[in-house]
Image (cartoon, rainbow, N blue to C red):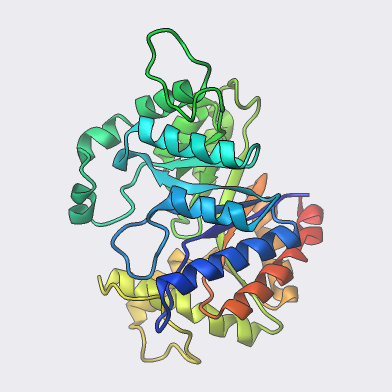
Length: 332
């Protein structure tokens, strides 16, 4: 069986509030745990009204307290925004609060626009350039204490599992060289997926953390009783991508019955291309499309972003998607 996991941005819906989004994140995590999902990850983004997961480590703690078994972590922490020591202390704290449950997924992008990235007070060029060395520093900080080494407290000796996230071939090469599990962002960057997986598997070097390559792929997922209902809820994601392309930052859109008039033909093409791996439909439709995705990619794990504005529909999608695991077993 290929595990299913959830990626959440704690979206703030039009007409809603940050407080409501945090309550909904806790409810979604609880539903995912009850349905048997393996992980619940939160993503670091900044300066976006629709995304409330900017203080990612804090929100992971919120999810940890709302659940008891599901693994929790980041998908991901944007390491160039932070010093490795601060990240080690934050995730060392989480590892002490929730033993055996915490993952640290790392990304190289700033997770925001350049002006906001500069306000995070890190040298952006140096941060991206130092990314591989910062990962190695994090591994040292999570390892046993060594004489003369800076001490991450909490953090030292926790050996928090590190994942490398990416949307390019660079990340595939780096994850392989460092012997880390690899999560590819095919939910918004589909073009390099197959090449990245191939490079990672071919060049993987075993490490103390991982003996053989392990690939997770991301998709958007909306499952409902009918194809029509699922497509209706998925328009929120389509509208959000259009807004991002137009640099119109607002709250997460509510769905619409028809996308006509909401996008140009070129925007429609771009959005459909970007979201080409999305699994949207009834359980029968989702079964067909997911089976093909797993067969073609051969992934070890699937992480699903469910961009659904209505919390009850989101919880229903969590439950319906969990029922597809038998299909994944057959496809694998």
